[in-house]
Image (cartoon, rainbow, N blue to C red):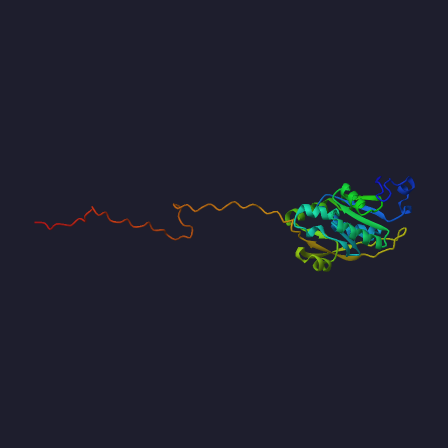
Length: 257
């Protein structure tokens, strides 16, 4: 539990609200935090099912049941600066649209994904959401091997995950689509205020944003061929024939007397 100021009332939640978060008014906000490339978007759907979360905010998008209902993906931006601004909802038009959709949607829990707690707090304040009730570090949701693999794929291949089916990305952002993938998510048991769900496959989309390109090894420039070096194709190279000297006369054999 973290003490975060309620952006709607400008004060911290009381003791009862912090001990019994389900009693506080408004939806409950969960935060998934981890550095870039550690697999947060990949784990988002599994975390949402585990905690009964209906909405996900990820890189400027608001997602419900695998469908984009509002926002603009930061992964479509050409530069890293504009991508960060989109991810934190820095555009006034984007903020107005997101607030309108959130006000119209009925939900009890929402997951906000960010590279740091400060980033999540900024998104929560901008969209006028209630205080964060639970922080989930990526290290609690993914193993060391999964995080290491995600970092390697991000560094070497420049791939990112958007937790929606490929049809959503092909329709809205076809220029960044790379491939689709599916993951088997384990079922959940019945809990307080939650419905049990069976294990099922969920589709996610792999994209390659313009600002994220795979690292390439730098090739050394090819050495210029040495003129004195012998050819490598096995052919003999003949030296040019020297021109005869004009002053040099050919020797003529004289007959013996």
